[in-house]
Image (cartoon, rainbow, N blue to C red; front, side):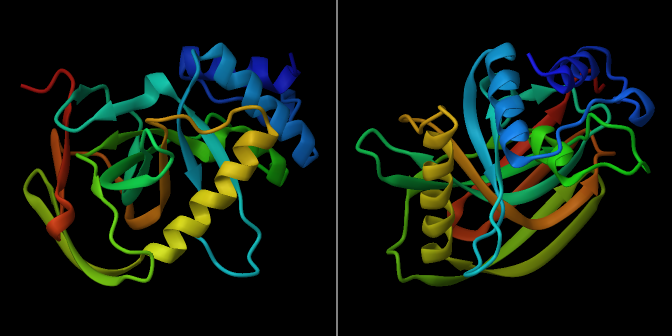
Length: 229
C-alpha cells in the first residue's frame, strides 16, 4: 500500500488532516490513480464517481467515491466539518444508459489546509469529496437538450435561488470520459453507479440542520443533520 494511502485512511478514521511535513504525497498521475484504487478497496468498495465539468479541450479529472459515502435523499447524516454543493447526477441504469437526479455533494479535504501540495495529492484525496446525497432518478432528456433550470436552496432560515443551464450532451460526454477512466483503473461502471458532474451552487458551509435543494422538474434532494434537536 502506498504510504499516502495509509495517511489518508488515518485522516478519515481520526478526523485529523495529513500534516504536510510528514506526508508522502504522490507526484504523478499513475501514483494518484493507484492510491484512489487502494482507498476504495479499504473503504468497502465504490458507489459513485466525481468528475470535473465537461469542456472540449480541457484536462478532465475524476475520482471514485466509496459506496458507504453515498446517501439517499431524506437520510440523517453526520455533517460535521463538511461543506456542500448542489449538482446534477447521472445514474447508470441496468441497460447501461443513464438516468438523471438532483444531488448534493459534500466537500472535505483529508490534507492539511494552507499548505503546498502537488496536484496529484488532491487527485489521490478523491478530489476532496466527502460523499453525496442522491435524489430520485428519472429519465434523461434527449442528448441535444439545453434546459434552463432554476435551483432553490433552503438551508435553515436561509434560501438562495439561481438559474443554471443544463446541457445534456455535456453531462454525457463527462460520463463517457469517466467510464473510460474508471475502466482503466480497474473500477468499471456497474448498474446503480452514480456520477456527479460539477457544482451548480456552492460550495456552502453546512450550518443548518436541514438542507433541501429543489431543481425544477428534476425534483428535490434533502438531508438532515444527525443529532439535531
